[in-house]
Length: 157
Image (cartoon, rainbow, N blue to C red; front, side, top):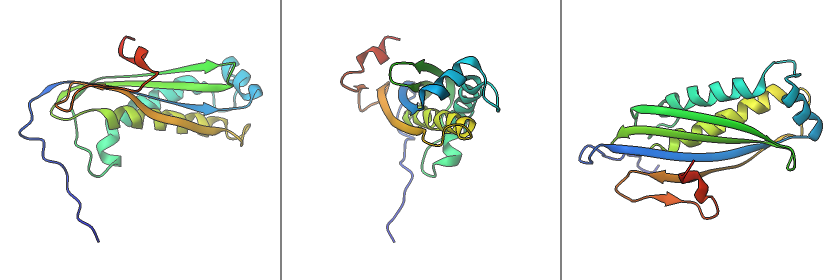
């Protein structure tokens, strides 16, 4: 069995760290209309998923065994309906002042928000697909800033 170590970050300086992640849940057009009208049996999908994403970001070190706890100062989760692609677009932005980044918090927020959307629609749309979860930008660390090509607007929003 291989070795496992939590990375030492004690020597690093505290800086403002920010990360933006995105993902989507692809649904049928009929399901998208139900979400838009708030007509699903479990209630307001977008609000519940937003709150679930924020909660998940705060619990990230409990879910990922080698992830450091960070002092989050802000977590924003936004969900938008994309009628053309028939999907719920999810974006999370996590900010902290700490010695390590918040990429995992942003990604966890998106993943759990997507899982929440899926949970709330599965009774009407078993073909829904969670897709494209990715880090799109990060800043504030020793390793430098990162912006995924084609998603530069994530840094200015």
